[in-house]
Image (cartoon, rainbow, N blue to C red; front, side):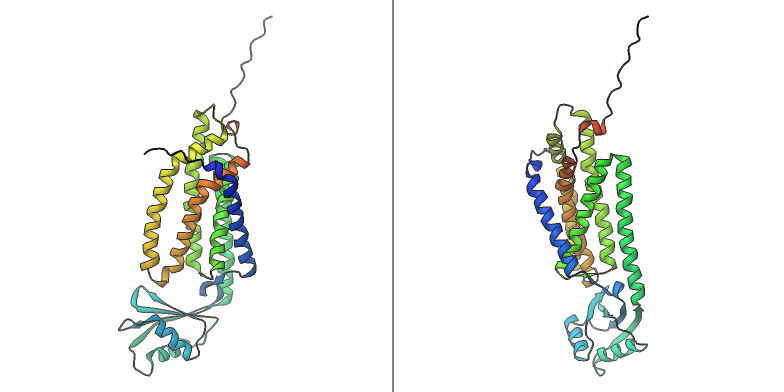
Length: 304
């Protein structure tokens, strides 16, 4: 594959400003609007029903709304005839039977109750806290690994790039009011792993080039390293995106948020692997001496 000669680092100031704007918008949205937490985090009731004939989801939403059930989420679950109804902050011992009676519409529709489960608000709060701690722990472990595997400046740049990806992905969900549930949290952890993999590939090439390109400035060396890994990065990202787009458009509402989080995260992660991590390395003044130990000076024996 032919190596490109794109001057990525010539755009570093524009890229830094663009990333800063994205982060500020994301933090602003998270601070003012917050996240639209799903049933997993807020608590509520999940009711699964089975229809003999596949219904229209909008008809179910309308029917439930007309009967006083507000703030409900209706999704397919595995097949067009399996439906999940999520009701936030709602629970009575007979709620499943009441909803079933409503969905039957005076016996006009053949529908069967499969299960009715309640998630308490306290459990939801614990899941939210544990999810946040899990994300923080993952970033700390990554920082330690990269510091040992490469060098401390690489560690700082990699974790900063991962934090950049997580904040922007969360900001996207906040800005566009997309429901945030446990599947999205799982997608975020997957994005951390994916983005780290891409970043490690670039960092490894930079480290190797520092050892063999002795007369090249860090600016030109990093630019060359990104161009050398660009083909691999783009091919990996595009093939992954193709699969995720199929899941997004054909996977149904049950994995809608999950696939969306992965799509946004992989796009941002690929961008940060190419631009953000390398840009931060230059800002941290990475140089050959950080990676290649200086040769030991030979001490001549003094003549008596």
